[in-house]
Image 1 (cartoon, rainbow, N blue to C red):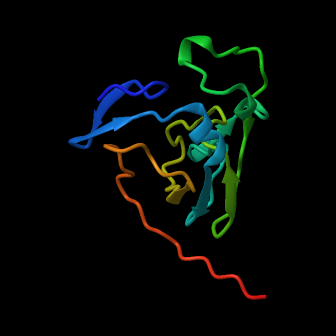
Image 2: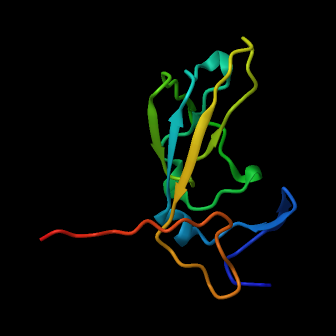
Image 3: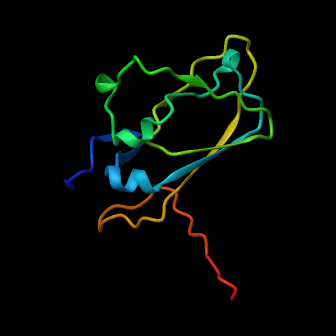
Length: 128
């Protein structure tokens, strides 16, 4: 289906996928729980700080003059990030694992006809 602001469409692991609008992505956040230490030598995440404020940036639009930072995290550490943050990770050069549990959160309901592929609702309760 064609929806304004959604795209491009791809197929990942035999499922259709589409990039949501920048508004949806701006409201999302990610928690990365590190089961192993992540360092520059085993492919720790590299980010361009503040890049999440630029909306959706296509690879050919990236200004490589920005200084990227390596986010080393000890085993058991937690990293919070916004999905629009420009990020990448490389291959390990020391043959050490860097297992991470990557969970994305969104409070946005998708338009009719689309659904989150692994949606799990979290009930909220407020005590007065």
